Length: 273
Image 1 (tube, rainbow, N blue to C red):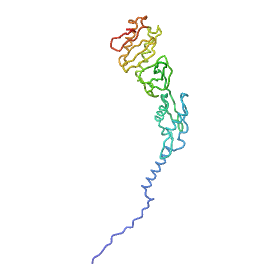
Image 2: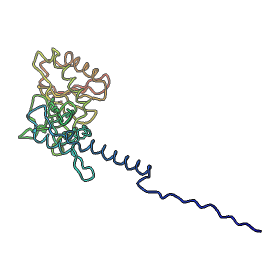
Image 3: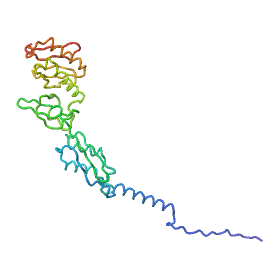
Image 4: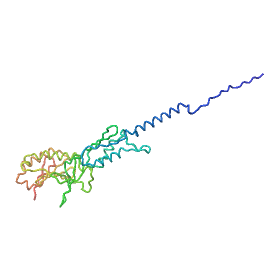
């Protein structure tokens, strides 16, 4: 007799979604992330409420504050945040320098929980760059980095040469800072020489002809031609020796230029020759 057997039937328990541990873990993780983002970006007591400006009063504090607030304000998922935690110091500094050419540096410091301190340092004029027209002299101030940053009065020491005045934009570098430093050092070294000091002779102009040709113009009208790409110490030595030994004091009024650019030679040119 044939016997038949039935397969055992197991009743499966119904699974409810709200009992899924993995799902709840994901939800909890997302909630934590959302809460964390909120705390970082939107927590009220971490929002910047005050911007303090320290420095020269010639710069408009109101504009500095406005530019700073604009740069630290961020749009997160359609909501604005000015949290102190993510203030971009370099972005604020660059924005202020772009807006104020006379600003050399702008340091940004956080004062928790909700204050920003902006310290402004202005450029200092060390020489003026001038355009000498027939009836007028137009000058701009140049700082130690060779940056033109404002109009200037005609002074007892100035630079002439390229670029043209109309091409200058505030904040542009119009002279290489290394060349500028060399020229100023040259003046500092040469003016105390007795051959110049005893007659009250000073250096009044650096006329830049090219990168390897500069006229150093004296208050007596004559010029020394130098090559700033070559050894300036040797060119200065030649200038001193020529003035002391080759150019009599009574003939300096007729002197046109001394060309010191070439090796061991110094070419002397008088007016009328």
